[in-house]
Length: 156
Image 1: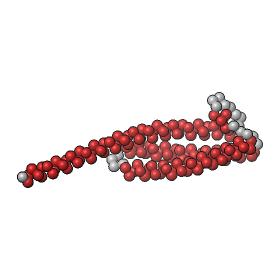
Image 2 (image 1 turned 90 degrees about the horizontal axis):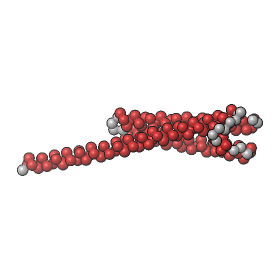
Image 3 (image 1 turned 30 degrees about the vertical axis):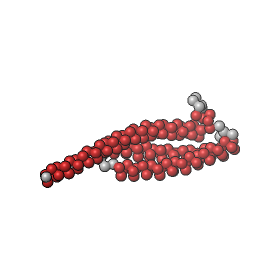
Image 4 (image 1 turned 60 degrees about the vertical axis):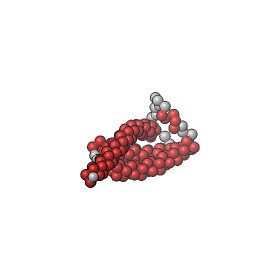
């Protein structure tokens, strides 16, 4: 591989590595949310804080995606390289940089799949938590109404 192409691929891998770290950070945050939902009470503030942190990571991922896209476009424009063929099953290359790229993309897909599963589970559990809260509020309101009825009966 020519040095100029190799340099671009090295830069591309650097951005992909950073994206991997950010994706892992979001995955860990979702695991924290899952823990909070299962084992804690009064989780609203903690979950909100974690989601805000996740949003920050997502913004950073968007920047990295832009950087990755720019480098890919440059490689394609200058050298006519087809990135789609790398992800075809059975694709082989003797170039470490190309294999590293493929492995990073596959890793990102796996992290995103894991993230999607845990996020879906967390959303379902948060909905259950919210419904439980509604039931508790309804029960407390009924108790409060009973207190007024009892007071009225006692004063009569």
